[in-house]
Length: 367
Image (cartoon, rainbow, N blue to C red):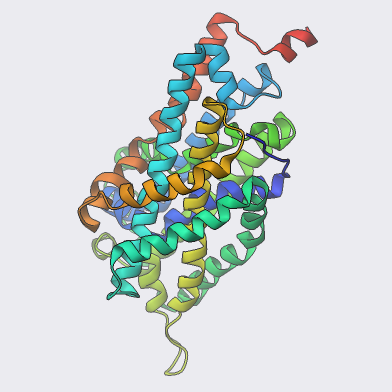
């Protein structure tokens, strides 16, 4: 597939919009149930783990300069096995996008559009995603870069406006259900930041290993800061007993902001950044699935895949029976075990390349 060049800023925004929207959905209540009041500490451990794993994975692009991740997999494992592993990654990105679309649909229906059928809301989401995908990789990246600052400042605004509702006592016990459980959960939840591996697929667009590492490290670090800050603010707003019961924590926080009779209903700010962020997250995940599929099967034009992907997205998104199954099975599984795909496949490739001393053509030419 033909993909243009983007800078570090747009690549960082690409990573941010694959991670930060998770804070705006059901994940905070999920982690509150897992580690209690130590959600912010747990996510810092997850960030450190993801950064370390990404740094190891980036060595592949030192040994295979100028190549995208699919070509590297095929070089190391062969065309068939490498292609199969790549398709597993494509399916994971697509599944993540579909479940995010279903999360957004369920929450929009619950809080804002109770009379609209799920199929109609998903159709609107699919149309927005298809429009973004139609204009291609560079346009999608530029759109993410354009909305990065407004979305992040909007999130910060909600945290600041909610300060009168904070109670320091809610942060205790500091280690939640125990330091050992917090650490183990943090190590497993690096899957939340595993989306950074998408940069490996578009590596040739990032103009070298240095830009790849800068974009990945900056994206994970900034996203981790905002997620940790968001989880801490949420913990300050509600005791962990209440925190694990709220379906959309940040929306509930925004609804609780009041400054007298005339300054209320701040969730309208949240709705704006929430919708933009989640649609971009779905679009980027679907683009990654299309990009990997196109590279495996040597399809140059991504536009031929937009309509089939949008249709399949609707069917897959409707698979979970209800919101409870969606969050406790599908979303929880992705956030906890997704790293087996996101980091497991690249690390396996790194290990085989190191043992077999496999290197790219440009690397061997330099020697």
